[in-house]
Length: 478
Image (cartoon, rainbow, N blue to C red; front, side):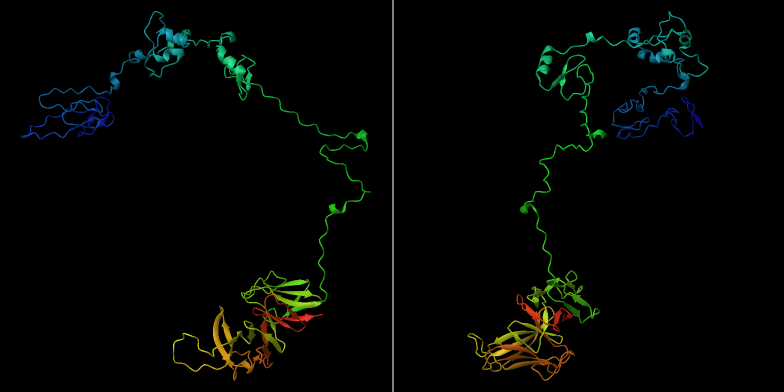
């Protein structure tokens, strides 16, 4: 182990500098002269390990002399570290340059303690000798300033008294004149200086301005016990009260809302399909909405039923059904027969059909290509088309008068897989004048339903059946 001569730290034998203070432990051994000295790339300081360019003899970072070449004296400055064994007995020599003079001490309110109790000693004392402070030196050394503390010669003078008010610096007359001319300025009660209206203290002497007293709260009205029945009128009253014996103008009285009249007779709708079979809906208004859950007659969440599909209304002692223009409409069961117009929809069994009216295919249109085909009929035909889900056209039937029959078998339009259809279920009858009638042949229990035309209400009677979406409702009157 190698002991550091500076701090006494033990280091390994191979160490070149102390681990604690980095003081060098041995002198650099001269290196053997090389046959051909290579060109130097620079020097690394062994103290701070900073890089220095070639030719630099002193470290540009810490000032340590770099390794001297052969034949050159070593100009390495002494290490800035001072071993504890070389410390002076006192710190006076090192702090002598930092000591203050007697005049500076007097201005600061401090008195220098006598050194070792000798007033004649003018040597600047230790810094801990001021104000009787004890130096944090080891116990073996004499305390600097103990004599001053014993004699009590070190004392702090009281702070000087503030200058009188008369000696304060007054603002220039020009400033006072300008401040006095300002309408928004206010004078200081202490020095008379003018300050802005919003100032909270004087900008000249610092005297705070007194806060303005807040406005007193409005006096409350108290009724004395001896006033009896005397009352006080409110100041906000604009007019005198109206006497009760004077009549009130008719225009100032709000007219009451007219009450809804009850229906002229009792009627109800009875559900015939679905889980709610037998459910009754009383018609309690003059106009009763028929549709979704929010209607007077709510049919639940049926995707084929509009929120307000139709209205059942009482009109002049009659019960009528009005279509409100929904996409799927509302249907009424045909009693034996009903007039039919081109574009009308009707339901037979599970089939939705559309009557398209007459179609003229008797003559060849000009410009038609001469393609092979069956001969054209010599008379006008009438067409009925099947409507599929999504308003798509299915099967069509073109027939000449007098009728187009619809059923399950043996008809002009046959739907053998429809179990609700009878063999001959319905018929579209065409008169010689072109008038068309939808006839229920009465062989099927499901009947035939004709769609109500928009803006053309139809009368309802007891026993009629109304179809909305997949729901059927029977009308009962009385």
